[in-house]
Image 1 (cartoon, rainbow, N blue to C red):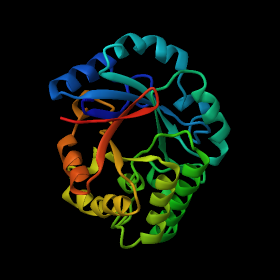
Image 2 (tube, helix red, strand yellow):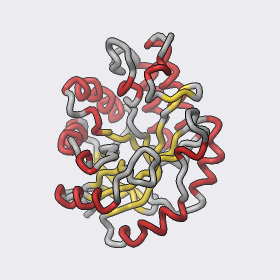
Image 3 (tube, rainbow, N blue to C red):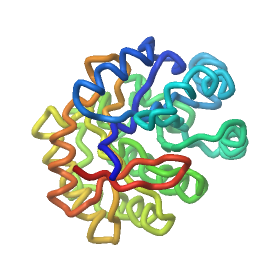
Image 4 (cartoon, rainbow, N blue to C red):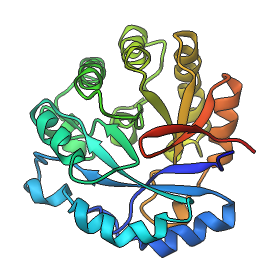
Length: 262
């Protein structure tokens, strides 16, 4: 039996987090959760140069391997997927024995989706189509990832009147992504960041239902926490979403999938 894990956590090895490992682990212990640290790796980061979102895997492993020994912590990486980074991403994984690899789309046309100016002058339909097309292509081009992170990332900061990625509006594009996941045996994440909003749950539910219909069976759950208070946030809602569509919650250790059970 494997305990439930929050499989998307950023500590001070990520450029955008100052959270200490001990802080994250204490918070997780209160909730009865294990953790997977997934520090940011984004080669070719457009805003501040490559060094901004790259960490030293040897230093990472040396710092956290003693904490990993008890089995309540696994060590992973959140890997930004871009065409220009494919070979560098693969090479990075050979530098440490990572437990877990989370693949993400953070950029379009080398522009950061975190910033509203990235959306300037763009139509939502055109931009979201591009987002899902890139996502599909990079899943196939990154066969070494275990899980696709936050399929709804683009909706977090999009300045459109309705930023949601409603399944009914993007059926073909989302289906293409989900088929890529199933065909490559890549798990999908239920990212809890927007599960505090009932609208977010409503819009995501059809995506996970369709994932199951197409043959998907497994999910990881991740809070995407960068501060202690966010560790495990809305985890129960993610569990409910997984169970509603008969999706098994899993975690990874030594790149092998383990089923989480009560």
